Length: 388
Image (cartoon, rainbow, N blue to C red; front, side, top):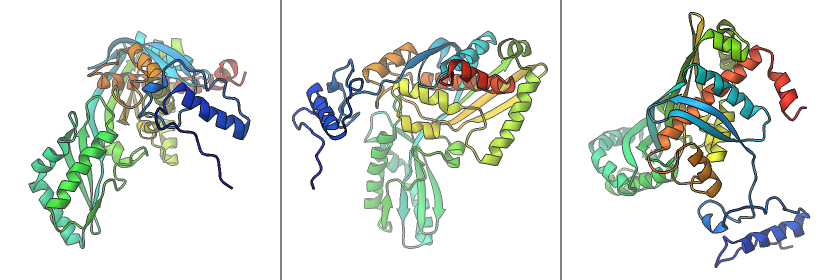
């Protein structure tokens, strides 16, 4: 028995007609009518490079949180944050945190590192030859850098990390990538570099372009330590009276809860010790055309808190926040509009977006963490969420 093939048009596969033929197949094979999937406002001709076998769109509701007040080096002032989600109370909770933080003077944001990796592994006959290769890498770094950068107009090689195990040298080629997230960019640049190395270092048996040390689209401890994407800190000191007025908790109550939750996080082995960083990151990612799989790395979050008299200091560090304002899905019509809402469309805006995302995460974690302490968490979902 031969299975029906998904229709494709070799002349023009990105048209409304081609999409309709594929929906016809679905109707014939499954009986499903794709009325809402087939409703979209943009021309499919903008989609090459973003999707294959296009049939329509997934319409995710977008809500507006804010205003978010940010005191950053790249993001400064008030922002209204588009968040794409189907979780009731999420936008309201983030808005609540943003309101309190704005009254406290805004969230201070700082980018402390910026790098994207590809991690080739190099194979040798023995550990001694592998060790000698590391010396050769140091001696030829400038040539390798020149070759890698010849493949891109914006990527810059900043370091080659080396980790020796058995007869293999595991490396991480670290780059800055401009406004792009840069995974494809660094793949090409590193391939150029590896091919040059293979031609110029005879003892090398072979290489793998990525031997998993980049942990692309997977959380890892090495990226928590070494950075992948943007390493961003968001911090704020909130007067105790604001916490009591907005969140109905005291600084001492919320501080104690953070201590307990951090220990619980250690017991579980989680990559985040704050309430829900992935919620804010995922919803902004979907709205602004980020690669949704990068949430796996980006949601790693290190929370820290301290009492300052009657006030409460809180910070989050995102060591692997991967965002872009160029490439991928950022130029698609809906996503481009959401970037414009944030003032993050156009060149030179990626660090601004990173600071906005980090500030958003901090506000959301403060709001949910307080709701748990004030025993309002369940009631909020019962009143405003799908539980009602």
